[in-house]
Image (cartoon, rainbow, N blue to C red):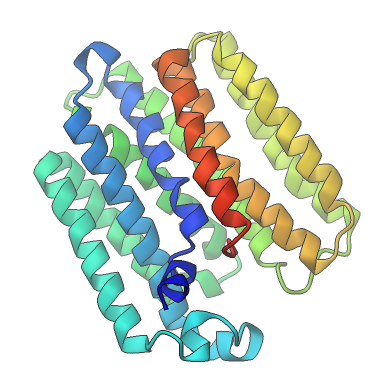
Amino acid sequence: MLRKYLQLARLPNAFTAPTNIIAGYFILTPVTSLNYLDLVMLMISSVLFYVSGVIFNDYFDIEIDRKERPSRPLPSGAVSRQSALRIALVLMGLAMTFDFFVSWQSFAVAVFLAGMILAYDYRLKRNKILNPVTMGGSRFLNVILGASPAIQLPLETNFWHLILIACFIFAYVAVIALFSSKELSGIKSKRQIALLFSIDYGIIASIGTAIFLGILKPSSFIILASFAVIISLIFRQTLLGNAVTVQNTIKNLVISIIVLDCVFVSGTAGFAYGLPTLLFLLPSVILSKKFYVT
């Protein structure tokens, strides 16, 4: 039974949420002012938001999943719909509570994030345009949540750096959402695959420009180059174009969010904090072999 609840929570994906927080946190907060308690509470909150979001997703999609994914916990009846709703509500409430005790700014961002998650799960994901916008927007707000304790008026230059980096995350996750729309049918056009990956390469080039302009530390280029290699390997695999390959592509792109976040952490706080961020890859990769990601 525990395994069914862990499947419902998309456990491998949950480890990609706190790295967004770390990326956002160090853009506005210098290492010398690091507050471990605030950072940990925001990371926990982020995981709770993510898990509640995927449970709400399955709760609202139960009729569709009964036709397309009947073996999953909710459509199979292994987990009751009422239990899933209660768990999702409690987790989201706990997430907002953690943020409330960090700062009023964090709580304010949490309110917007909760609203976007619910809007996406309930209706917006069915819209071809709003689906990638709201999915990317949720990650955008997750990065902002990480930086929220240090957001003050008047806004400083680093705030606009935060927005820029959050936009990179937004664009990358929007591409994942576009791939997700082809999860069951597969992608038959290599031109479409190339177009989607060209967006990722555009993101990589833009981050490289940010490094060149001094927005991020030069040392982060090493991680960025590694990320580019990973994306190229995923691109090569995806050219096969069948449904199973698309599912693997989505899984690999989601897990690679951790590497992308490492670029930003290394580019602000340095390797001493950036490289440990990569440790989140271990549970994510290991669990992805036992639990589904998409």
